[in-house]
Length: 334
Image 1 (cartoon, rainbow, N blue to C red):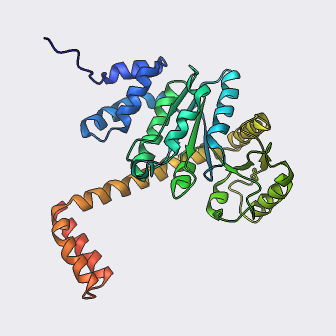
Image 2: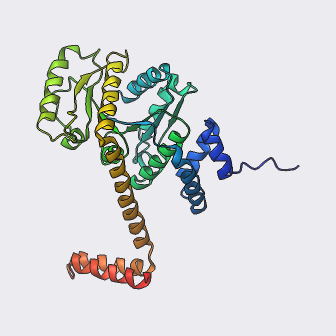
């Protein structure tokens, strides 16, 4: 019997045309190509991205983080449905570098966005599986380019709410929203100062459940934000309340995000923020590539085990070890 048709990757030209036309299947294939670690695929992906880049950049990029159990998925679905009702096209990207190692719950959360998943004007995509921070960051940034070129008005980037992923997401969005829960004892207990420093707004979710504790929570977060330096002299992060389940406060929350967009566009901070993000992306990408190249170097691999043994035995110093390994790397790279 003759074999069935081979499922080949569409050409760069076909992917470009499909993305620009908003073809959901080809948008998905384009993102799969961008996520691939295959060197051949990566070359094709960069060709595609170069063509798409002039058509990207027009979306509102919003990062959404929060502690586990805060209700991110329910909130995002409600927000996404509201925006679609307003005539927008909405994309949701989930960022969880740990998911490939631990089977983290964030990927399972996507299955709970049943209403949003069914919308033709919505596109939901989890992190690349088994991703590491640098790889997930690259794939997510480049996926945003694809989605913007496909005409999505708002890109919501959800992060798991632990580790370095918040900083990574904050470095690729225009607005960083932190969801918090009231009624969990001391409002700031266990909350890292770092995540509040990244916040453009704090939203206390599940306001319908914890009504009596909202005022205390609002005051607690306002006090915490008051002692931190604002990223812009024209914007102090507000503290709002909402319910992702009932939709209470979600429209008002989005109005604040739109107000931030107007202010930052007028004062030039939005453009500056994106320019700085591209420079940060360049720096981190160079670091990742150089480190990967360093550890793949045969001379380094031959010397590394012996160097580590000498360090364990206290027979050498870290500084001397670094110099020897770098010398071995440079000698074979020249």
